[in-house]
Image (cartoon, rainbow, N blue to C red; front, side):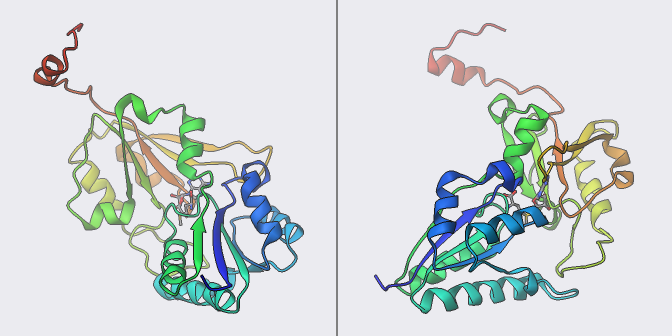
Length: 260
Ligand SMILES: C[S@@+](CC[C@H](N)C(=O)[O-])C[C@H]1O[C@@H](n2cnc3c(N)ncnc32)[C@H](O)[C@@H]1O
């Protein structure tokens, strides 16, 4: 192994309280820290843990394609690793959930012979399960990026819960400093209407990012989704719309009693 290394950590959605002990230690002990967080308290928390910390937010420029931003982030992180530094990069939430550059940096570092690992963090979905009282074991849970859901022939199971990430930025490939028109939202609605009735209640969810704040939970009938308030931090939760159909043949083969 070469002397540089890379550890990717997550700061949780609410950094004050959700930054894990092992991530704190990694940030403190690193020679160089990079970070992308979603609120200013997290910023100063990371800087206090390690004064070498450098924000990667500068690569998000109005109108710049996201893929270019991600490549710039990987390049900056790898510069430090190649320089022989124990490098730590912190991303908000879980660093491996809906974060392209974290995985890309780990792949790049390993391909060049550096030690690289990722530590888990608390994602928006984890917060959603807690705030909305959803247990994915109860009905199953399908998770998609909203744009990916529109662009591909995805199949939904309406007896399962469904979570659509990035519902506030559907079809946007560039960073927009001034907010997103979200012109792709009607297409999401069109596709969801193949599976759900217009009056099926869906929930626009935003976890609290600051301590002491409450999550924003907006239940709306599916047909009213376009009039809900959406932001780049919104996630859509769709509860199951029908009961799960039991497979009686499998019940028999598993030797389970049929009690319903
Ligand atoms: C680039 S992804 C980052 C996800 C993050 N790594 C995580 O683990 O949650 C951004 C998307 O995550 C979700 N998200 C981020 N912050 C959120 C919050 N405070 N509440 C609900 N969803 C959030 C939204 O779907 C948003 O569009």
